[in-house]
Image 1 (cartoon, rainbow, N blue to C red):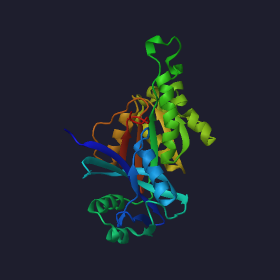
Image 2: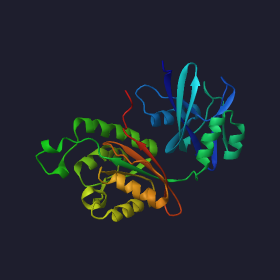
Image 3: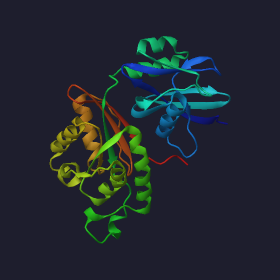
Image 4: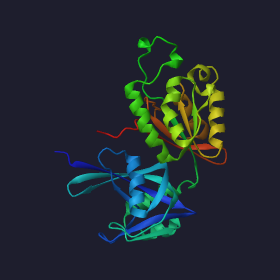
Length: 294
């Protein structure tokens, strides 16, 4: 009989060249902040919530760092860790954590109790903390093409697609979504329109990031993605299945990043991480669905 599984999430929270480590009086240990994923919650949601509960700080997630697995009381525990920029808040001692220290990476590594935490911190330190994020979304589910009587570009989201779009509306802000771009089809725009409304933004239409123009001139699409990435604030780009795999694969090849097969399910998200100089792609994290697992 397989042991039951416990999902948890945590982060290396950083600010001004330091990272957060916490002391838990129950275990008398120094560790990275983390906690269990609640029912009806995604792993990224859990990471942001746990950081707030344990440290008092609001964070914006970046790249996925490590997945740590270990046994605990007859169960198999899995903890996913993220890089997380602290954007505000203040620490107060609580039931789980009685002390928080902001330390340079080397000093933090010295006081961590567990080797796996040191491994997570080493992965964080492998790249500069300040990176550039692009959130690349495939549009949510639309009605079947054969059942739609109008132009395909006007085919709207289905009820399932509307649920995905509603989930993305809550999911994308975890990664700092701030600017909105979309391929021309209505289903692409509709996928991020709710979030644009929340942010007080308009959705800018990008023909070169839609299937019709990308298939003829993929190089223009990649150049436009880099232009979008270079501006201030985290962009959300809503596009199509005929664009996303080629776009990411081309960026990875140009940057020397080895990626497995690039998938793009409807309603999925790629968190692309770039570093300067040259906006080199250094990480690409895939989230097949913004909906929590049942």
